[in-house]
Image (cartoon, rainbow, N blue to C red; front, side, top):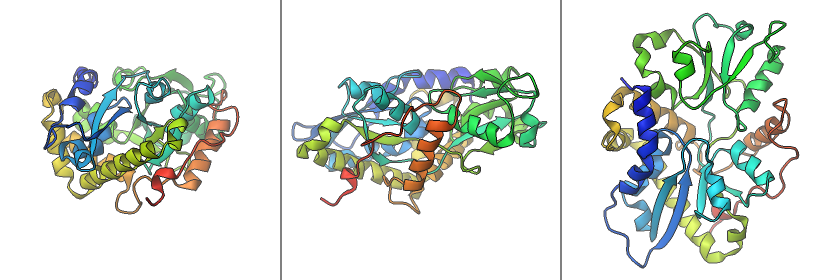
Length: 336
């Protein structure tokens, strides 16, 4: 069973693990060096990149790629804007919020097509209306827009008085849920199997509400570059090669998930991970990428428009004050 401490240890050592994933050949001076920041979360979240690194897909296209993780509370886009990395993988809410505050970050590819954000509740909340009167763990930093929009649809207040809900700021783990401080917790389809594995059979009685099913989902993990770099032909060419190799890795995850599972389970700190939970988490990530139905990297215009609308209107304190301009580029998806 996966314990919460084990998950936290894994998150802390993952930057070292990313650097330690072997490639068939050592980097040489003829390869273009790229530094890529990835978001906080379990290794399954970035499995496509791990597979691409392990199988030498980046080396095959002349790249020497180094991945880094800043940890919870630090966005990869911060590192991008400060010039510490060349590319960043981040959720759209977090990226656009930082862009509005001045970060030079432009969306250039979308990895997660499907929405993984969900609310997991105890069995007594078997209907959305039964949220009234309960404590609910909510993620902020842009994620909260979906929940507030849902409350509005349900005609429920976010004030406990008057039959509303009590919102509790939640971290990425399940601690406040497992310790009965909240009756619902925010999580994702790929985190839930790992975080709730300790519940064993008790997990079967939980009720899950997915924002994708409510058409209230925000776009999640995409690729961001500095706008200043997109005017440099050699940089764009390197970024195109990165996207192609990364897409190959995500496609390989879809084609052979057991290979990715073996890679995750072989990581130095994977001893505490439940193998079945890892498999379920990888399946959820693969479903989000939707490699069988979408050209990896494509941005769906309707999903983008929905995300912007929610970021402008979905919360009492909206993530964005105005619709962004020039925040998206298709340059990496244009023919060479």
